[in-house]
Every structure is written in structure tokens, then in C-alpha cells.
Length: 332
Image 1 (tube, rainbow, N blue to C red):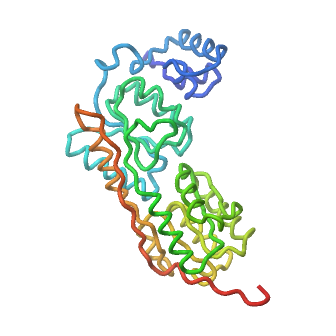
Image 2 (image 1 turned 120 degrees about the vertical axis):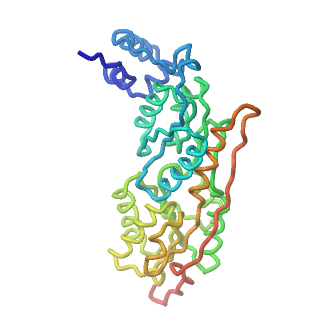
Image 3 (image 1 turned 135 degrees about the vertical axis):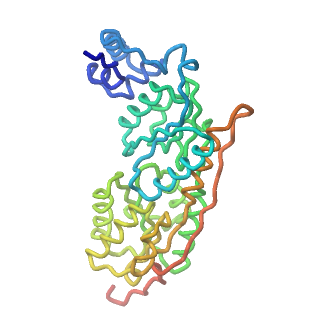
């Protein structure tokens, strides 16, 4: 009879709390006295021995890179992963891949798994809950964030695209075409893009035209369709990612909105299908593969000073999905 090793998920289930809570308690993070006592009692009863959180962490590390992404089926994240794998391959390092679905609980579970397996380094597109990463950093694991930052962890190096310049360029382009009712269709982890969008529009910003979907295709489509139906007066949309851009295209088609005659559209991410649309989509291109490669370079860097973050340029690629705003007639 084989004896299965107790995992952090087992402790969470028995204690009736989330994996993130167990991780915080076991690493000395914040929790109520009652929760702390319950988690520690359950961990003792189940004989939970978190190898990566123990005193001999450095001796027990097995090497390798952990890579955590929201969604491997998303073209952007697939290209980012390809960059990480290319760099890791050249360094002879294995990569353990996990997908979080932008779910903090799932992310915490995967972090616990990577720590238990004794990985040396982690690259992650974080979900945004900064407290989840505290155990990893306390354990001394080398961390690099890619594509997004995590709240409260400015000390962790990050490889990012220049969202600020990308959003400003897109807004300037649309306002230059005469658009004033410009919507933003966003998703998880896009706080900076939203902030810059508001700043760039200034007095023209309309909060009703800002919609944030969850990380699924269904949620993105529902957000886009709801936006178009409730605000038929909008004339342009900036979609914060290719999944959101796809949703905007599908919703516009279902509602008989013609691009760009009725609706101008700009999308973050240059993906192959963007050129196949009728008309081809104007995009803000991000160097996804370079982001992954540079993140792997940073996380594999040995010794010396802590590496600084990297900011990579974005590019507005103008195609056919934007047009000058049509002047309304006297009745509209």
C-alpha cells in the first residue's frame, strides 16, 4: 500500500480554508488567531511537511523553472511561453508549466506545488493578489514577473511591454479621427492600462464605457455585447487583449455593427487572425516571445546585483478597422 504525501491542498480542504490562507499561515503571514490555530492543528494531524518551506530549503531544491500563466490557449501567452522555453532550453533548464485561469486560489495551489517540488526559480504572469507571493519570496526563490506586476511587490524584477505608450498612442489615434465616445473593454490584470486610458481621455472619459470582463471567452463576449447594446452611441473601442478583441468582433457581427463604418476597433496583441478579419484589425503589437525570453534570462542570471526590470516597446499597426467618426445627422 503506497503512502501518498500530504499536500497543501489536503490541509486547506480539511481546515475549510483556501490554499492561499494555508500558505500564508505556514510562512508566517497574516491570519486571524483562530484561523492560524485551525490550520496548524490540521497540518499537524495530517503530518504535513512542506519541504520547500522547511529550514533546509536550499539543500532540497531540485532546480528548474516554474512558469505560471493565465491561459496557455491564448495566443499571446503561448508565444510568451515559447520565449521562456527557448531560453531555458539553451541553458539546459527544465520548465514546469502551470495555468492559473487568473484565479488566485488556483495560483496559490500551483505556487505551493512548485515550492514542494523544490524549484529554484519562478516566472509568472501574476493574477494581481500580491499576498499570494509572500511565501515564495520569504523562501528565497528567484522570482521574475512577466507581462504584469503584482500588487506590493515592486522589488521583484518584471519584464513588461510599454502599456503606457501603447494606450496613449491608441487613444491619440482615435481622438485624431474625431472619436469622443471611446470605450475600453478590459480583462484581469489591466489596472495600468485602464489608468492610462482614463488619463489619456481626460475630460472625455465616460465610466459607463469602461467594462471589465473575467478571463473567459464567454465573459468577454457578454461584456462586449452588453456594452454595444447599452451604449449604441459609442463610436470606438479599445480592446485590452486578443481574447477581448475577438469578443468585440463577434459581438459587433451579431449586432450588425459594421467595422469601421459604425464602430472603430483597436486591439492589444497582434495575432495571426487579426489580419484575416474583414477588415483587418488595427492592433497594438506586444513582443510576447521577447517578454518570455527576457524573463527567463533574468531568472537564470547568477550572482551579482538583483536584476532590474525590462520595459519593451509596443507598436501601433494601422490596418482597416478604424475610420473617421461619422458626423451625426440632425436626427441622431
